[in-house]
Amino acid sequence: MTTRTPAPPARAAKDPARPRPVILVLLLGALAVLALIAVLAADAAGGDNLVLRDAGPIARHGAPVAATLADLAGALTLGGAVIAGWLLRDETDRSRVLLVVGIAAGVTTLARGTSLAFSYAVATGQSVGSPRFGSDLSVFLGTDLGIWLLIALVIAAATTTVAVLGTSVGIARTVAALSGLVAFSAAMTGHAAGDETHEVGTSTMLVHLLAVGVWLGGLAVLQLLPRRSGGAALREDERVVRGYSHLALICWVALALSGVWALAVRMNHPGEVLNSPYVQLGVAKAVLLLLLGLLGALQRRQLATGFGSGEPGRRARSTYARLALLELALMGLAVALAAAMSSSPPPAEAGTPPGGTAGVLTGYPLPDAPSVLTVLSSWRPDPLGMAIACLLVLWWWRPLAPHRPRGESLRLVMGAVVLVLLTSGPLNVYGKVLISAHVLQHLLLMVAVGVLLGSVGGVPARLRALIGGTWPLAVLLAAVGPLLLIGAYASPLLRSALDGHAAHLGLQLLALGGGVLTALAVRALPGGAPGRSAIMAATLPLLLGAAAGTILLLTDTLIAASWFGATGRTWWADALADQHRTGVAVLVVVALTAVAVAVGLRSTSRRGSVTAPGPQED
Image (cartoon, rainbow, N blue to C red):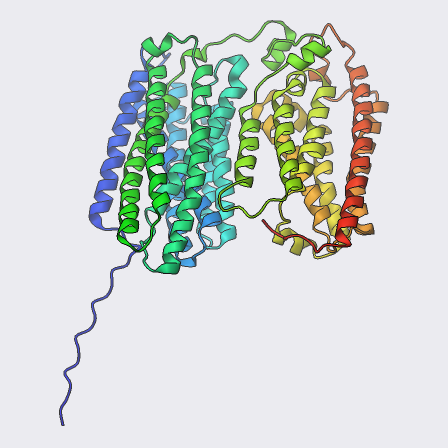
C-alpha cells in the first residue's frame, strides 16, 4: 500500500485589485510633479498683480496644489461613475471602479476643504496658522466665492457618502449626478470674465469641467480593469472601450470650443497672447488639447483594428493601452495648468458694467426697442444651452444606439434647434429686462423643447414601474413641472434667478426637465391607445398654464417689481402693461399646445389600434 505525498498548498493568487507598490510610488511622483508645475505656473500667471496683503507662501503655493488635487480627484469621481453607471455590465468590474470612485470622492472632499481654507487665507490676507486665522471666516462664507466653495465641499462630502453605499447601477448614476453638481459649484467660483461676459465665463467653465471629468476620469478607471481573453469577455471589453471612445470624442469637442471661448472672454485684446502669462498658459492648454486629439485619433485606429485574440488584435490592444497612459500624462499636465489659471486673476478681471440703469442691474446694456429687425438680430450665445443641444444629438446617433424612427429623430432635432434659439436668441436678450420675454422663454422651454424631447426614445422602466398604470399618479407627475415653475415665479427664487447666473441656469433646467417629465408621465400610461387617463394627464398641465396666464392678465401686482420695474426702459416703460401682455401670450401658447396635444393623442390612438407599444427604455 502506497501513500501519496500531499501536494504543497497552491500559492494564493495575487489580488488583482491591490496595486503594486511601484505603481503607487510612480503615481505619487507624478502627482508631486503636477503639483510643482501648478505652483510654478500660478506664480507665472500671477505676474505683477498687486495684493493688499500677502497671505504667505503656504496659502499662495498651497492654493494651486489643492486645486490640482481637487480637479484630478473630482474628474476621477465623475468619469468613473459615468463608466460604472452607463457602460459597465459586469458586476465585478463595476465594484472595482466604484471602489476607486469612493476613494477619489473622499480625496475630492479633503482637497476642496483645503482649497476653501487657502482661498479664505488669500482673500483676507491672513497667513495659515496666524493667531487671527479664521476670525472672520463667517464673513468670507457670506460672499459669493465662499458660498460656492462651501456648497462644493458639502456636495463632495455627500458624494463620498453615497459612493460607499453599494455597487449598483443606481448608486453609480447618483454619484455621477452629485459629481456634476460639484462641478457646477466649482464653475460658479470662477473668476468673472468682465461684467458683460461673466455668464459666458461661468457657463463655459461648467462645460469644461464636466467634459474633462468624463474624459480624464473615464480613461483612468478603464486602465484599472483587468485584461481578459476569450470571445465573450473580449467582445465586452471592446464594447466598453468603443462606448467610452465616443464619449471622449464628444468631450474633446466640448473642451476645444468651451476652452477657446472661455479664454477669449478673459482677454482684453489678442496681443495678450504675447505678453500675458495667463493667456499663454491658456494657449499651452490648447496645444496640449491638439496633441490629445492626435492621440485620440491614433487610439481610434487601434479600435478599428479590433481587440481580437489574434496577433493584430493583441498588438492593437497593447498600443491602445500605451497611448492611453501617454494621454493621461498630458491630461494631468493640462489639469495642473488649469488649476494654476484658476488660482490667478485673468487679464479681463477688472471691468466696468455698461452704463445706464439696466447695465448696473443686469450687467448688460439695455437692448433697443423691440422691432422686427432688432428682435431678429438680437443674439446672446449661451454655452450651456448649445452644449446640451449638441450632446442630445450626439447621444441620439451614438454608434451603439438602436434604430431611430424618422419621426422621433425629427422631433429631437427640432427640440435641439429650439433649445439653442430660446437660450441664445432674442428671448434670452430681452428676458433680462421684460417679464414677457422672461416668461415666454421658460414657458417655451417647457412646452416646446421639454415635450419634444420627452416624446422621443423609450420611457424609463423605473418611471413606468412607479406609475404602474395608476392614472392619478401619472396626472400628478405630469403636473409637477408646471407647478414648480409657477411656484418659482411666485417665490423669491425668481429674483435670485434674475440676479444670479446659477439660479438662472437652474430655472431654465427646471422648465426643460418639467416638460420632459410631463411628456414621459403621459407616455408611461399602459395601452397602445390613449384613453381617459392619458387625456387627463395631458390636460391638467394645460389647465395650470391657463390659470397662470389668466392671473398674469388680470392681476395688478407686478412680479419682481424691484427688477422689471427698475430697468430704466424708455420703450415699453409700463412694466405692468407688459405683464398683462405676458398673460395674453401665455394663453395663446396654452391654446396652441392644447391643439397640438389633441392632434398628437388622436394620431397615437390611431397608431395604437394597429401597432404594439414601442420599447419601454432606450
